[in-house]
Image (cartoon, rainbow, N blue to C red; front, side):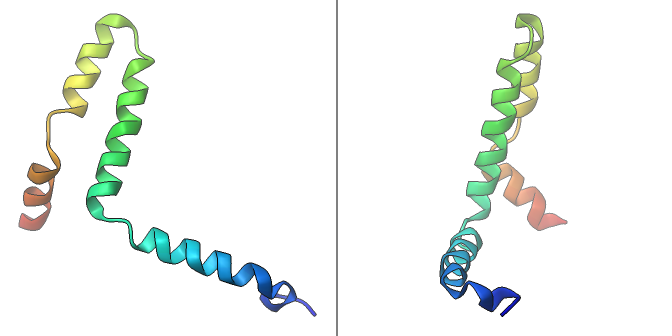
Length: 71
């Protein structure tokens, strides 16, 4: 037997992961991206850190969502 039915016991966990990812909110994605950007800022030199953080923190999720709805 070949294809996805070769290991049917792997189908359920894959399906559950897909459903969980689909259940993530836009806010969670936004905050996750923001956390990743903040992490990158921490790797910057001290003078560049503040500059980087000001770019990352310039827009709240609510502002982002309002702007996105206008488009």
